[in-house]
Image (cartoon, rainbow, N blue to C red; front, side, top):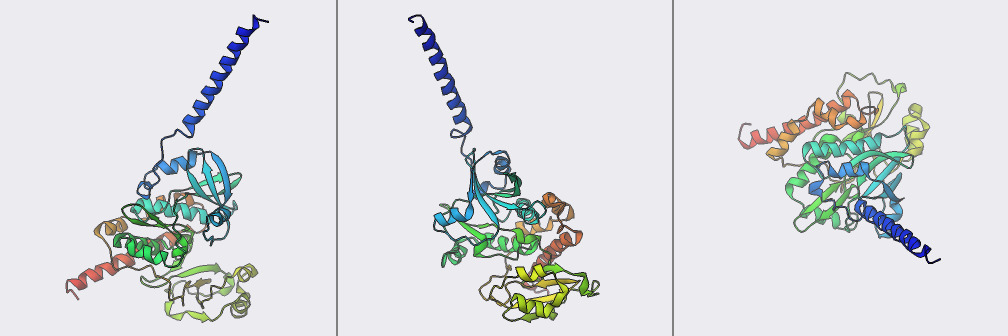
Length: 361
């Protein structure tokens, strides 16, 4: 029996060392990783996006539950989750059916556009698959400020630099994010400045017609039965019609059977008139029409640096920005050319302003 004691002690010693080594190895890959700089100023490099791609999921939870637990509002639809990774990062995962990933593609493209332009502040966003679900994954921004609380968004606008506010509005206009506002904005503050964080940018996928300084008309649905025969004509901005106090029943009565039943059933009334145009066999709606509190994506400020960035946009750069969405239905030549047209509207507006200031008119 005595002769076995040293042997057993040696086995115990080896087991302890092995376990200790395992703990050390695990700590190297988790708690002892160098901290990741997730400050907005660091979003433009590829470090965070790469970590989101490589990270292993530690936990996943409903975002709605998470926000409610913090006493925050949750004003969104769809399957949204907060995900934690073994590398310490947290991210927002939006899941979509495999045949309807267009919103996810748009979210990723918005981030790529922010890299190409250098503005605005869009959290790193990638396409991914988690637990058999596909969708967009966006860095979770830690902030204890709720933009939906009374007065918070307005105060943040006053605190944000003129350059950042102007660039955010220019991005929204040029890339077609028509659904902007406090509900799609996060507010992040450090010791130096206040940042407006642009989230929920899936609206850029929508085809639209707009004049700089006005609300866009966004395409809702297409129907061959309309037979408008107006493809050669310009968009009829001045021929918009209005349906007061819109409901699904009222829309169906006025628009008839030209659109699928699913359109009428899914219609949401925002408490404002339904202002629309029928053009090119499609129904185009001017969202936020009648909402006096809505801020149009318009600015009188354009820095030289921003001007250069906008001028650098061309079809080749846009195709690179939307590379993740190359198979998406919305990504057509007309869609990309519309972005360039809106960019041109901005540049022409400021060229006229400059000429006017010089007394050339």
